Image 1: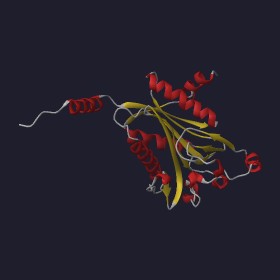
Image 2: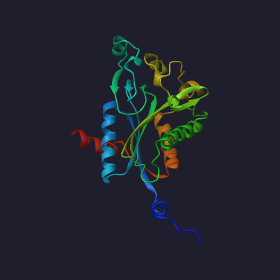
Image 3: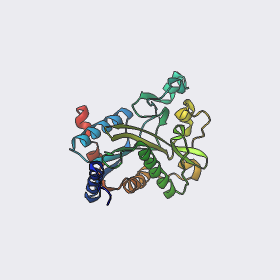
Image 4: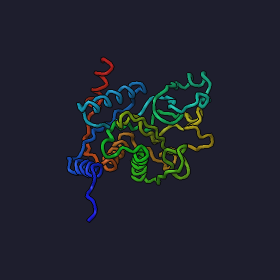
Length: 256
């Protein structure tokens, strides 16, 4: 007879059983409309701290930002190619952040998704997490009548449709709790990408749902689709929240 399972194997089985037997985790989601970039960051950090302390549920913040270029941890400031006068005339802010990746654009008509999830104990794999975010976007595009695809290589993290890049992804993990996320061009003015080297890809062609389909779906509608697919992909039970209740943590964090 063979030897029975050792301590490590027994611990793995026990952990698996705890995950399988536990009730479905909830994901509280909300569409917040237009939110200033720094306010969006503060909102995520407040939610991350609350999730870490076990005092609040996991959240998915869906919103759009005013015009802003954000520089991730691997960004080269030279990839913001627009001169200062151009930035000022078009009202574009420039912000550094702690997500992975390089330079990207956020602005009106672009759906930004910030999941604040605890990947412990069963999803502690950053590659899997990125692929899951891609899957959420791909399924959302499918609802809008568009194909979505991944491309191989770390420089191609994002989602493509019909040969053009339609969504960007950049994340940050702290003790396996996530911040930042994805940005899907819906009715985005793509000319703002002309002021940067998007994600370090000099020859990339950017796309939007409107540009590829001729349709202008409301961001709130696309947000509801993305939330549904996030629940499916991450195995969470969705709970819809109003914008007021969803933003309560940031009010406490910034003293408003």
